[in-house]
Image (tube, rainbow, N blue to C red; front, side, top):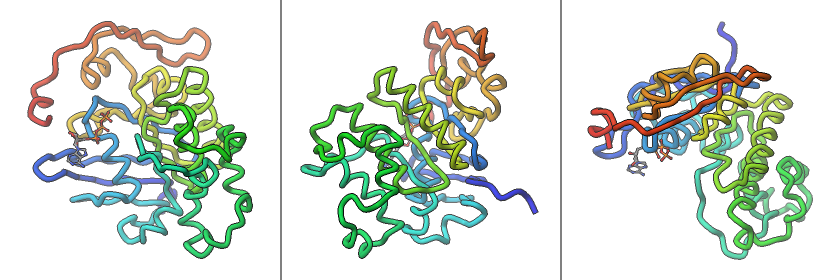
Length: 275
Ligand SMILES: Nc1ncnc2c1ncn2[C@@H]1O[C@H](COP(=O)(O)OP(=O)(O)OP(=O)(O)O)[C@@H](O)[C@H]1O
């Protein structure tokens, strides 16, 4: 028997009508592992996360969560195992931070459990608010928060699902540098403390190289590189995957790769076909 894994994406093909996006993607992320997913705009990163969360069904291939086929799980059972922080979410007029984060408990508690809850009662909600340092805003309206504040509250909502697999689509969007690092370090800490499998879409290679155990590069619907930051983040990757010319050095203390991007390269032929 092979080792049970957090999340295992196997041979996944997917397209929207008239638009093939993923063409046979394999990806395994073990408990306690943080994988950064990188690639050009429109290459299919968010689509892959939505498939991994069970919000889309693969045309071919499958997604396994701890060995169970996601396609066989109900929406609610899936939501107890995998949480997705979306790139953006619609505004909800009048909703408080606590109320929004409580929404993350729906899968675990069910409709009756949600009704019975007395407000502050759920310790997982309190912990999620604390994890991202937003407990002092619990009574504020979400719509009255800044973009960065709202992003952290949305992360708290994903954490409130209390799943072993966490999918984060650009979790540092809107955040200032201080809070980018704060959120990334929180994710790194939680994945170690709670043995989470984390897949995180990032555009900032510095963050991928510094905080992820693995960097997975997607191009034209396929995984074209998957390894440690040192293995993957190279001038070749900058050029082939991100269409940027630049140098790659090494952090003198930590040893992780440091990029010095210089100028964009023209798109490749396949990109014109796909997009
Ligand atoms: N609901 C949809 N219907 C049709 N096409 C879609 C839909 N969602 C995304 N696409 C297309 O699928 C492709 C992949 O989109 P996706 O959002 O997965 O890219 P991405 O890598 O996450 O991009 P970005 O870095 O810009 O967030 C794009 O060409 C996009 O236009």
